[in-house]
Length: 285
Image (cartoon, rainbow, N blue to C red; front, side):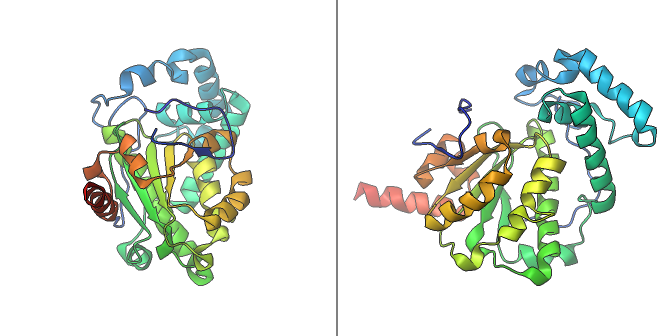
């Protein structure tokens, strides 16, 4: 796992389908939903607020009982969710409680775990978003091929809901094989102005808001490949909306092959595998 770097706008590093789902088990920082351990559990568990800061964790639990007793039920009061909001808010109980309240309200209203195949199919057929992995840390990965996304104001809500459904499904999968965190690969090859959907990213709601406010401590790493001036323009617009923790997890890779530091070749999307194999064959000639 690459060491964490100091905060910066975007980190440049060198050679360093989804279907509709029904109600799934919730991710668990301690391990998989069946109680077995995952590869990172031994080192990760010791740093959890419920383990390392039991007094803070108990204060959070007490606040929920006192001020939101109607929501003091599973899955909202589970150790995993409380740990994540406490970490996201640097163990500040009042701030973590406010975040928790917002997450509970959003999940009740939005119900990200439910999406019909009929509703998801139009966007999934475009091939914008799929899953791959796991990465070297055992985390499943979302692969976004942004050239296949077209600005579509009419179906913005449906498209966003489809992406969030994939995000939901992927975090659930991560609980089975890792620690509830996910990886993301954003492929910018061939992206032009017609693909620059800033509303999808920074709208209210948009992907940035959803990820940071409703899925705290879910993003492990985000790798961006095939960047161009279009990406630099988009990044200038989007990056101010990212908190420092999220920005530190964004890595711009100068070469596609740099992904092999984080993924086995056979765990990458088929089109990336083909490109890397073709490039390797060409280099041998």
